[in-house]
Amino acid sequence: MILGLLMVLSSLCQAAVPVLHAGEDPRVLLAKSAAATKHDVANIRVMTIAELVRGKPAVMLGGGRVESCYGPPTTDHNLREAVDRIERAMAYLEYEKALAHVQVAEDSIRCLSTPADAQRISRLFYLKGLIAFEFGEKERTNQAFDIAFSIDPELVWDEYFPPDARPVFDAVALQLNERPVIKIDISPIPEDGFVWVDGRRLDVAHGLISLRPGAHLIQVVGQAMTSHWLTVKSPKTSSKNPSGHPRLIVPSALTQAAIIWSTQEEKRPIFDVVLSVLYDPDVVVYFSINGVLVSHRVGTDSWEELKIPSGFSTGGNTRLVAGRTLMWAGLSVSAGGMLLTSSSWLQASAAARKAEGAEAWADFSRNKIEYDAAIDRMSIGRWVTVGGLVALAGGVGLQYDDLPFFGERVAATWIPFGGAKHLGGMLVVTGW
Image (tube, rainbow, N blue to C red; front, side, top):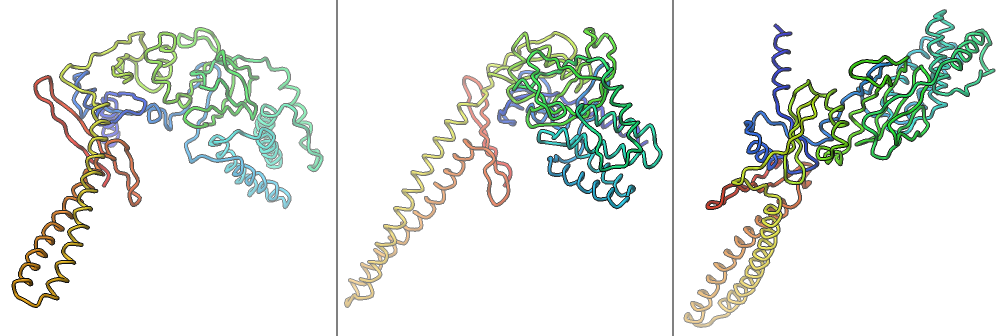
């Protein structure tokens, strides 16, 4: 029953129609997309490129595997502290404790959000190899030394440690040098044209990097830097990988600017490669750019521009003009209200003083009438001020989304609708 429920939930998630954008107002885009695609608003999911790729792991096609981060971001400081704890535990021959710190350090490596220190990572696996040797685990010793050499081919034996494991260490070094270099295709190419591999910055302007078989840490800058453990093996040719080069697909390498690729013939295939690891074949994905919607069926070369119905306004400029008009009108009205309030208060104070000093009933009655009239004007001024401030706040909210108020987020959106004969709109304020 639980499995069936999960399958239902999964199918519901897949049923949502994705509409990608680069920072448009979600509410306006939702209405625009529904009008253009004929899908129900409830079945449309509007998201940015950043939301599309957030938390999505990298994928390796042919010739290896890849492990991505599933925890919070870490820095070299976290790794340095973990390695220091391993060294201290080993100094006191506390190998069980040292092994626990090794696991923590390994978990932090694939979540690094800053360029890696290759020598520190190599040192970690060198220590792991020594610990495995102490436990009599020959295979784990070989694997750890292998990773240590893959990360830092210049690694040398530390004479501080007993030489018992030295023969295994030297044998792994010889094997590594005999391995052939393998070219790996990276998709998409990061915006800056570089990736970090084992702590070294490599140019991937042509989309290829060369690595020896073994474990490597690859770091890619997209929305932010993401790290991935890459285990390179001999490549295999397949229908998805006709070139024979292993292909590493890193969705997080996409930035917001990549939305423009949906209109560029030479970039569209790369976009489709990324979408193919995020969606099932034949799923239709929409892209909103420059006032039009581009429709694409995943796994095909079908790209089509959709026309927005003439009775629908996108509301981009309307929202800005409405916001500015409302803001300045509110400012003027509130300023006028405050002026009326202050002048009426002065008049009421003057009339009150005259009434207190009046010696005749006629003078008192005249000043009392002036006082009451001034109090009425002051009350009107207060309400005018409040109304102006409300209009001012609404105008600012129309222009600037996500305003911080007492730790909450406030957003206001003007959604116009109608056709040639009837024009209206709706002000939506959320987050109070």
